[in-house]
Image (cartoon, rainbow, N blue to C red; front, top):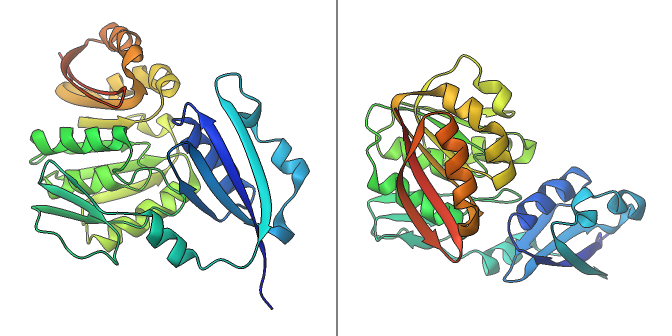
Amino acid sequence: MPRNYTEFKFKLEPLQPASEILIAELGEIGFESFVENEDGLTAYILTEELDEEVLAGIHILHSDEFMITYTSAEIDQVNWNIEWEKNFNPIVVDDKCSVRAPFHEKPDTEYDIIIEPKMSFGTGHHATTHMMLQFILKNNWEGKFVLDIGCGTGVLAILAEMKGAAKVDAIDIDNWCYLNTLENVERNERKVVRVFEGGAELLQGRKYDSIIANINRNILLEDMQFYAESLNPGGQIFLSGFYTEDIPAIEAECEKYGIRFDDKLERENWAALSFFKE
């Protein structure tokens, strides 16, 4: 017997990091699939699993930082593969790196990454992930011990290994991201990426030559001390997940820990910064 789903259409302002946070919270209460679009997010849950009281407890829906409205409707059974294929197109970054799904044709690029993002953030389509891929492409990773904190799909960790990193730790606090990164690391036949579930508390006693952190502004500011302690002298740190107007706050926090500005990228009002530790 077919099982019906309820479709929720959320309008989000600003789109990020609201979409990322909302996906994480909805995933915890049983939502199975998500489609990100220009002004928000469409999410699906089995109608029999829907609990309106639990939905009302989603924290971000009551946050003053975001404007969120939504509608819902019950729909017939959905073929998720078809829905996902309609909404995920391959991308190419700087003519060097492609990010695609298994069903896309292999492009003629130096680095080819195959992922199935599912409920995880980081396909390369969002401006922050795109810029972080650019930073990885333009910098040297040979023989380095790398941290990808807030790894999402694992796409940045995967490219770091492709660029010659000796060891890569990929960490995410969200269970779905942890599992999805494990899956994508295996799919891309990576050998030196280790995946961990957790947050900055896992960094105690660990040292890295390069750190990649594509997380939202508040978490970056809160955890900068831990990143600084884990970064070797002369090491690089690459940060994104915030708007251009947040750059002064990020730079000031880095300066407190002897982390000096090196380079900047901007895309669609989002920023990505690189720093080095003295």
